[in-house]
Each structure stands twice: as structure tokens, then as C-alpha cells.
Amino acid sequence: MQIPEQWFSEEWWKKEIEQSLRESLIPLAGTCNLECPACGTKSLCIEDYLYKHGLGDPIVISVSRCSRCGYKSVDVSVAEPHEPVRIIVVVVKPEDLDSLVVKNSKAAIIFPELGLEMWPGPASQGIVTTVEGILLRFREIVESLCKKQDVDKSECEKRKQMIDWALKRYDRRSDDERYVMILDDPEGASYVYGERVLITTLTENVNYLEVAQEAKETIRWVETNQKILGI
Image (cartoon, rainbow, N blue to C red):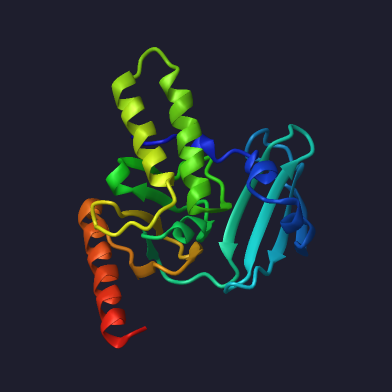
């Protein structure tokens, strides 16, 4: 099930970013009198903020607002973008759901085992959240889609059940219990801060289920060697 990009609306600023984070933003720069992509007037202002979260590279949050029509958009990136990248999170333990996700507006999110995808579009925005936060947003939008008359109700219920299963917090011992979140970013401006995070080169025409299986095998190999070494 591919989720519309519109689920990344400006509401994330109110819901996903806590008050404590907003208060810790450091203003970087502001530019006004830019052309608004919605109404075409030179009423757009862009403000950049730096957020130092203590886990790695600082995050730059860019907020665009139009004083004429009310248009707003948000983008997020790491302070020092890298090469095009594929970021893979393997969910094994409850804390993996708390991995911090910095998703740039050009990035795609795929949960291969859950059959969920989000691809960027013209109205794409950035977001700072967690793996759990992304799953909760997927569930909200799936519930909304399920209320429509022209959708497959059984498919909707199946997706909701799979998301609920993915949100359960327990140690996932077998590969069948584990699942993967893939974040593809052609600009290299996204990042995920967590324990079971793999970073690879971004490639095209891939089988995401195969990517997920390879990632789980890599994590399994790491776990085996840690046991041998007594780590």
C-alpha cells in the first residue's frame, strides 16, 4: 500500500516536534520576498534553524511561510549532507522503535515486510520523528483510507493488523518476527540515529524484500559474533 505524500502536512510541526525541541532551535538565517509556489506573489519567507540533539550531526530545519496565502512547508536535513544513501533500520528490540529519524523531503520510506511505501511528491516535506512515529502516521492514514468506499476493506484491515504487530514492543528473536524500515535519500540529507542501523549506497531497481532479508542476515551475523566474543 503506497501512502500519499500529503500525510506529511504542516501538522507535524505541532504533533511530532515537542515543545522542548522548538524551544531549543537556534535561528540561522532568514530570507523574505521570495516567490510563493502556491500563489505566485513575492510574499514567501524562509527561516532556517539549527537543532543540536546530541546524537550526531546537527539538524537543519527550514520553515517556509507565505504571508499572503498562508502556504507553509517544512524541510529537514542533516547539517552536512552526504552522498545519495540508503538507510536501513532492522527492528529487533523495543528501543529500535525509538530510533530518531531525520527524513529529508526528497527521501522515500519503505517497510517491505509490511507492504507500506511513501514516495516523495511535489508537496513533500521533511520530518523529525522516530520509527514508531512513522508507523503511527502510517496507521492513521490507513485508517482514513479504509473509510473510503472504493478501497479493498480486507486489504486495509490486513495493513492495520500488520502495523499493530510492528508497533508491539518485545524482543524479536527470529527473522520472521523482525522487520525493516528503508529510507532512500538521493540527496544524502537524511539520517537515522539508532543501534541497528545500516548505511549503504543508494541503487536503483532493487527488490526491497531482498534488501530487508540481507539486512536481517547482517544483523544476525553481528549478534552471533558478539556472542562469540562475549560482548
